[in-house]
Image (cartoon, rainbow, N blue to C red; front, side, top):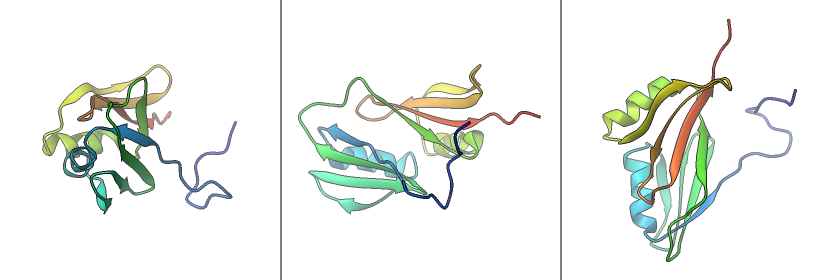
Length: 124
């Protein structure tokens, strides 16, 4: 069994996808205003949003991202679901326990990118 993620990693600190998007400012604003990320760096060509140990970068491009989806691990998927629904998030898939041991829900960002939030189901 591989090691679980750690708050004190040996080497890798964080991965951060870079999405090529036509509207950097609009995309960063969505992640800030709806998903609760912090947006403290960027302009209309490049921006970074982050929340806790998760960051997403956006770079200006003519096309929207395709063929990908983002998965974000969270500690309490139901609490996060309620948080962003309260901010007006349009949910594509309600929180559901999956047979592979993850409780998850999903939505599409302003570029149509599927973003899935999940947590491991605790077994008793």
